[in-house]
Image 1 (tube, rainbow, N blue to C red):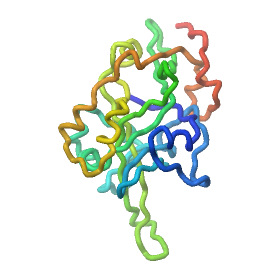
Image 2 (cartoon, rainbow, N blue to C red):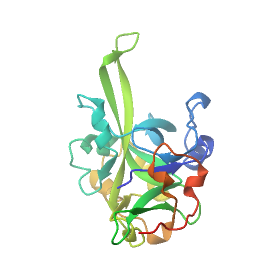
Image 3 (cartoon, rainbow, N blue to C red):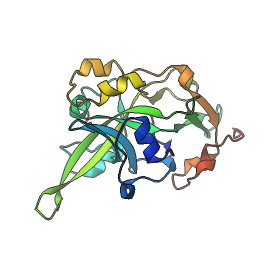
Image 4 (tube, one colour):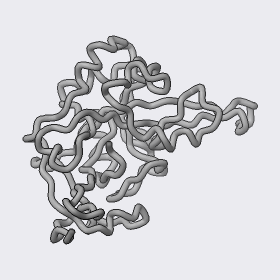
Length: 237
C-alpha cells in the first residue's frame, strides 16, 4: 500500500516537470515531508484540453457516496481490481491523474519483533515519482453555494500493484509509477481504453528504487520537516 509520502518540490517546479499549469499562489501547497491520508495533495489532471497541477483531498469519495468519510478508506486502489470495483470503475475510465511524490515511506517488519523499521524510498536520479492516480468529484447536498448549487469536493486515490524485487524486501505492494512516455495516454480523459490503461499498472523496475532507514519520528503524522527523510541508524528489534 501507500499510506505516507513526501511532496516537497515547489509547485511551480512540479508543474513545469509535468507540463502543467501551476496553481495560483494562494492555492499552492507548502512542502510536506509527511503527507498523510485526508490531507490536500498535488495532482496532475487534464480537463477541457488543459493540464493543471491541482490540490485534491487524498481519499477518493465516489460520486454516489452518502457520506464523504468513505474517502478515509479509499486512499489506495488495487491495480488488480481498479477497473471493476464500484468505487473506482468510473474514474478509471474517465478521471485518471498523476500524484507527484519526491518519495514515500514504507515500514519493514523486524524479525522476532513487533517493531517496524520505517524506510524512505526515492528515485536514484532525484526526480519525482509519477504515481498513477484517480480523481473524482462529489457534490455535497448539504453545502450549497450562493446560487443553490451543491458544492463539489474533489478527491483522489493512488493505485498500487505488486512490489518489484527491490521493494519486496520491505512490503509486498508499492505505488504504480508511470514512465514519462505514458503520461499523455494516462491523463487523456477522452481515452477510455480500460484494457490499455490497465496494461500500465505493473511494478516499476527495481533500478528506479533506492531506500534507506529513517527515524521512527515519521510514524507520527504530526511530525514534519526535511529531517524526516535523512538516513538514520536502524532501530533494534
